[in-house]
Length: 108
Image 1 (cartoon, rainbow, N blue to C red):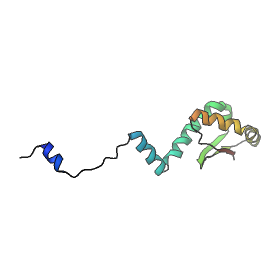
Image 2 (cartoon, rainbow, N blue to C red; image 1 turned 120 degrees about the horizontal axis):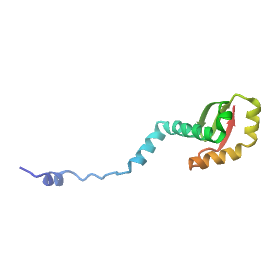
Image 3 (cartoon, helix red, strand yellow; image 1 turned 135 degrees about the horizontal axis):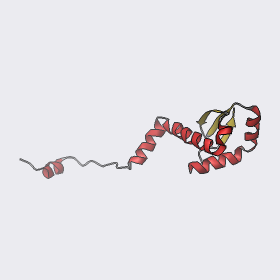
Image 4 (tube, rainbow, N blue to C red; image 1 turned 30 degrees about the horizontal axis):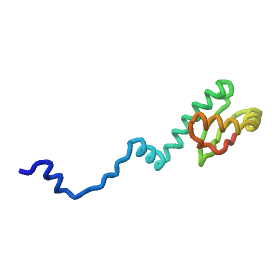
């Protein structure tokens, strides 16, 4: 009867492709389009903390598409005010995310 070591030595050499599980999860998230959804949830939470409940109550959907953050605002005057400071908002959100994933913000 052969030992496990003998059997292992007889098996053809197989190169391993070891990667950390975090790397594999990121690849899967990107491959199946879940990373944008996860980022949207993070951004929604950041937006709520940054703006407070009074402004957040006017916020509808928040979508991230190809680096552009689309934020639905129900008040036209608030939408105009936020548009004036969108570069600062973009910087603050990217800083909170620890990643420069937002290239522009559009208020709709």
